[in-house]
Image (cartoon, rainbow, N blue to C red; front, side, top):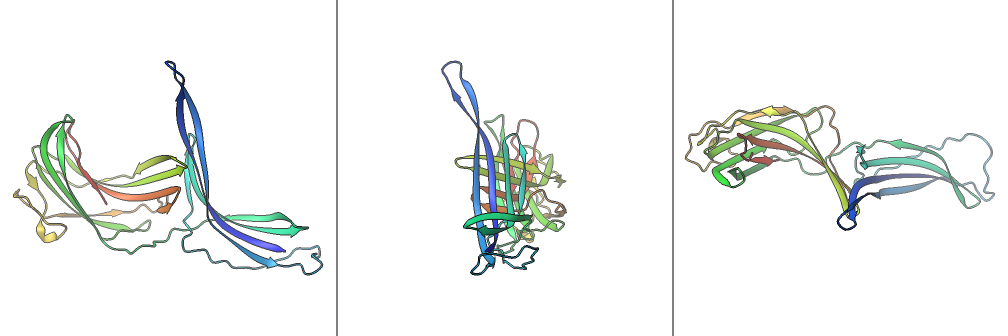
Length: 275
C-alpha cells in the first residue's frame, strides 16, 4: 500500500550547566532536547491488490488532508549557543513492501498564524512606586493604556490611548511606548527566554505632580488632584515582517506586548505596564 502522512513537531534544545567538586568547582555544560508531536494524520492513497504488486512506472495520486484547528504556525528560533527552537510541518509518502515501510518522498511546508481568540479592546492600569537608590520612596506614578484590539497582523496599525499621572517628586523625562516579543522554549525542566524590543516611540514627558490624563477619554478614570490635560493617542505600525508568529504549545510560547514605560532620571526605577 501507499500511505501519506502529515504531521507537525516542536523541537527545542536548551543549554544548562551544573557544578561538581569541592573548593575547586568544575562547571559542566549540558543540552536538554525535547520533541513534541503536535499532530499526525495518515491516509491510505493506494492499495496494491491481492498480488501486492504495482507495475513499474511513475504514478500520480492526488489527495487532500485538512489540517487540525490546533495546528500551530511554523516558527524558527535561530540557534544561539546551544539554545534553539522550531515548529515544523511535513508531508511524507511511504510504501509498504513485504511488511516493511519505505519513505519515498517528503516535503516540508509552512503554516501561517491564525487568530483563535475573540478580538476585543485591551485596557490596563497600574500604580507603582518610584524608588531612589533601591530604598527611598519618591512617590507614585499611575500608568493607563488602551489598545483598540488585542490582536494584529503584520503591517496593521495599532491605536494606543495612554494616560500617565505623575504623583512623585521625580520628572518623567520620556514616556516610551515599545513593542516587545517574548520567546520561551522548554525542554523537560529546563527553559530559556529571549526578548526582542522593536524601535519604540517617544510619547512626551510629565513634570512632577502633573498629568495629561482626562476622565473623558474613559480609559480607567483619574483619581488625582494633580492638574489634568487630555489623554494622548498615538498610532504604531506593526512591522510587515515580524520575527515570529504568536504561538502557544507545551514546549514553546511566543507572545507580543506593548510596553508603556516612564523613563526617569538616573538611579530611579522606571515604572511600566504591559498590554
